[in-house]
Length: 190
Image 1: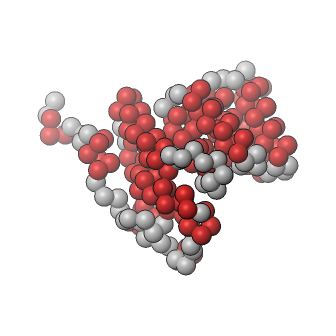
Image 2: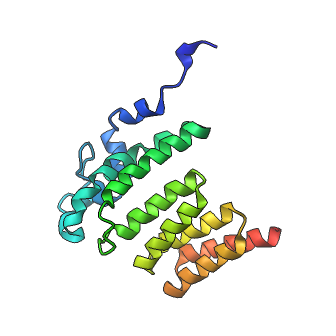
């Protein structure tokens, strides 16, 4: 095989600067304005530090890594998992104080859970989703992440319980109702 067609190392791919406009579309709005990520018009005058408090300054590492996360999915197997796992350090930096009163704590903890789910570390994913829910019992994405983790393990009853817990906190939330319907269909096929 001609080595000139070898794919570059994921570390090198992540080290390259992101396309600014693509980056702005791949990150949460509160990341816009960090290095290499322009502020899109709806958020140009938004003061995120005022909204999220002093701990907001630590989110820069997460924000600069997040738009590159999609690169990891262009790899497979161990390389993909190692690339994704490298994102955890950036999330952990943003959470370095483990300040559960930090407004972004549930979101960032959920993001950490998403990475663990993607690399198949299910107990770590579950733990992170549960932490996010403990801090904000109305945080729908954490319930969905928790259910997705159970689905990956074919634990449909636990997935259904997670969604029902979310519905207890968020009655009639469409995303939870859709996930519950999907789980029930999976259980029926079992």
